[in-house]
Image (cartoon, rainbow, N blue to C red; front, side):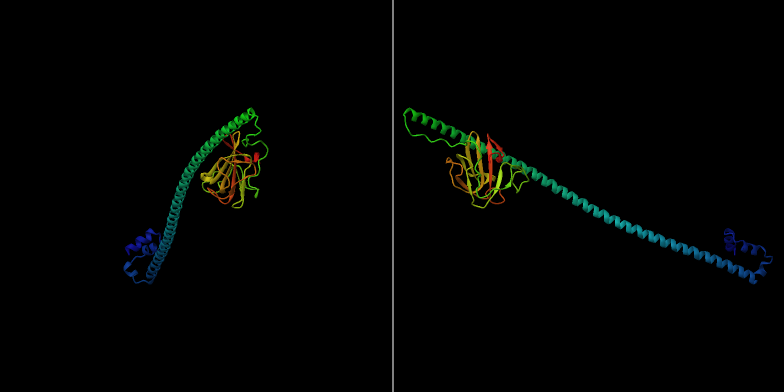
Length: 294
């Protein structure tokens, strides 16, 4: 009874308090139905409140459980996204590392190609210098022979040293006029090829005849690195022509040739993607556009 009175007072249940205060004989009240009814109503009210509180608590627990489940789901999603992000980052790092290695390899290859090209240019320059010296000696010998012939009143004329006398060159590959790669900057067609093309490529059949573009002296016949089988002709006055990627030769070093003479046959030797003629022109030790002579 004490607890009921305290609870009623604390919760503002005036009816229950009034009923208790109106009692004059508490011993007689116990048996009165009115009192019992009031107590029963009060107990029912408290029970209902407790049930509502329990319901609220259960709903709150359910809400908290749902929130915790959502938080756990978001946590799992975040962890999954973090793992995916880490995998992507690792993949990016691996890709960057691969690109860096490729860049390093490319830079090394470019340096190698530049060194090879410089070495080949030096070899060609040496060939040209030797050819110029031989030509000078031949021209001096021819001049001396001509002077001696005049002194002796001889009718025999000494043979002239073949030289370029101007005008357009003869097209070096009569069977094809298809230029597959022009002179100047380009994308390297295959590994080991240069990005600056120092001549023109003429696409043709394997074994097609290759002819001298102008009169001259054959200064080189042989295999020449990336150019494969090569013929170089000295035309005098620092002018020379190069014919590369040949399958075989029709002349020997030191031979005199005239424009239109067959000097070799087309092939795909050296650094090449298929049968063709690489034709180049050099003037005073430097490559020039062959289009200015053809």
